[in-house]
Length: 227
Length: 377
Image (cartoon, rainbow over all chains, first blue to last red; front, side):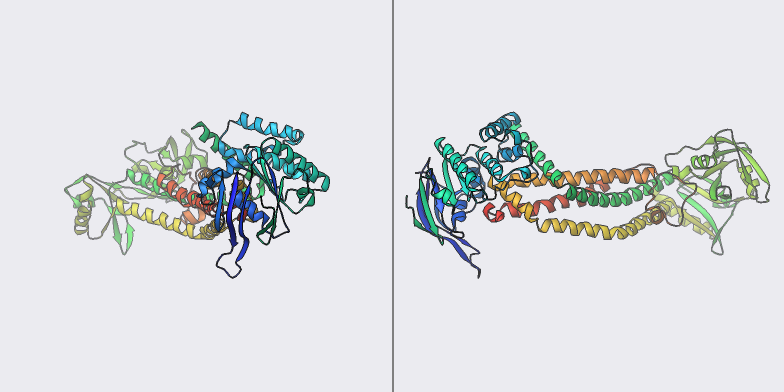
């Protein structure tokens, strides 16, 4: 067992008239070296749950444990360390920084590690080769197609060699061919030892044979997919 | 240590990249900031230089100048006043001075003319200030013709050009033989323009001035410290006037800094959210933005200050001259002696670079302590 959630809840605007409970008590586990998918309609709480697992936000109540370590109550500084060394994120809109080149975007998460420029560069180049982006290395990211931008986002997520990859609606901006290609890439990463968590309401993703487990959410509650 | 330096280098590289990405905004910001520093520094440098000139001007002047007042106006002092003063304790030297102004229609300017015994000039010799030399194109050996009070032309041979620590002192000065001075202006042997007294102990000056007033009731002793104080207040007042005129731009800068402090654009917030999400710590995001503030404000400070220095000392503060010099514009034109006051420099730095840097850090800190998920939404 790698990730364990116990009665996790998340409220926005707590105590205000527009208080909203996005997650209303989820208890489950996600295991290593598997591709798990959170399925559900928009507003079902997929992104919020992924954010809490990935230490991008904290639960209002409940507990999240990672390898026997409770991460939901860690101070910000330690939370960042966990985020930096354990997770790699692929966002729905890729969230690449415009104006920077492909290679600069990829190296961004590694800057705070203070690696030697040559070793940082060679890490990035290995990823560029692996994801067929060598000829785009110095292009600004605004010039990339949707598929290319997503591959850059994957490279950026992998630059610090994280154990867990979190992909939030990764195929939302891709056509079905590119979506299928993306799933093949995830399969390769899983086989290489990565744990993958995807949120999606795209059948190409949750019906994909590479997905090991599908968890369905509805209105902040888990409705199927007990692990 | 090396890792830490490398990290800082990456942050600075990233910051420079960010500034290049927002070229228009960065350049606009830099221009406004530089202009503010330039204006404030110009006023400060000019006023300080003028005060320094005043100090240099008075450094070798006598401690007490005695004028004779008649019907409220300053008039020539009879030579026998020196005898009437007699021997005052603490006074090391007393002598009469001859000085006045000469209007030169050729350059439409007033010269200050003084009789000098120290220079041992002959009746046909004259020593001129650098300003006069420049304006009239005169050098040693040339002749300068002046018209006497009777309209008669006198030609004087330039025997030397005056050099001084302050051009303000010597620029418009003419030194001549006392006899020549009396002939030129038609002043009787028994009269002086004023008397000067040198005093050994500065603490006795006030007492001696009181004694003089009792001895010569129609005299007015003027102390060197009083003149210096007058100059200081005059230039401090002018600096104040100028700063009030600049208040509008200073206010604009404050509003601008406040605007920076009170919020970030959606794009900037998102960028911080992304950086946090990919593993940057709050401190690292702040360091990156700190470098941005430092680069902009230091560049603006250095360029603005350097431009102000050139403006004040090499173009004679052309932009502010009318306000700072006032009606009493000195002719021929002179150049200020470059001088920088460390305290003034530090004050300007403290009130511009620090507030701006802090103003850029505060909103970044506020954003970066928020959950990245919330910031990116």
